[in-house]
Length: 231
Image (cartoon, rainbow, N blue to C red; front, side):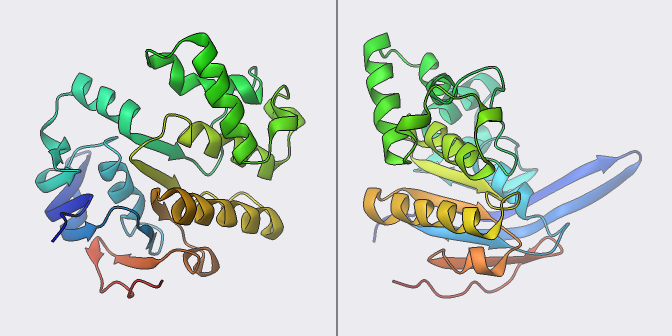
């Protein structure tokens, strides 16, 4: 049997608030195969964004196993973890997190500046990626010259331009109107089904979660039974 891309066993995460310790995740165990499109759902405060941040290597658990592609990322030092994130994780945020003074092209190119690619190779890859998200004609526009949906497509292009192992999306449609949200979800499905990208998406929207291939529910820091994977 092929090992899962994401393997989590008995994961615990808490935060200190003054003298009080607040437990956010309790004994979480989860396996996500390569090529999955998984939605993490739950009410506010359920721990879904915390779990996403742990999987993405943004934060570290208090205890438990957390392996991505066989690597123990929970045991990595900060510099090693930063290098791992840059090479393996593409991030998509609710509010895009684009640099306002940079063009769409320059925003997408940012992750590649940390790679050994030549300037010509970077430009070719950025142009191809913007074409994939149907923004080739907007590459010279800054974020304030783009609609919300277009800005999120720039953010998706930035997330995939380095060909990451894993794409993590935190409420990627939360700031969009229904039409733009549907376009973004369709694009995520294409990345999953046509390019085989593994996507983990946090959402509170049942209609958005329905586009994923399986749904994992969190409530009060505990994992509920996940819904079966669909074809």
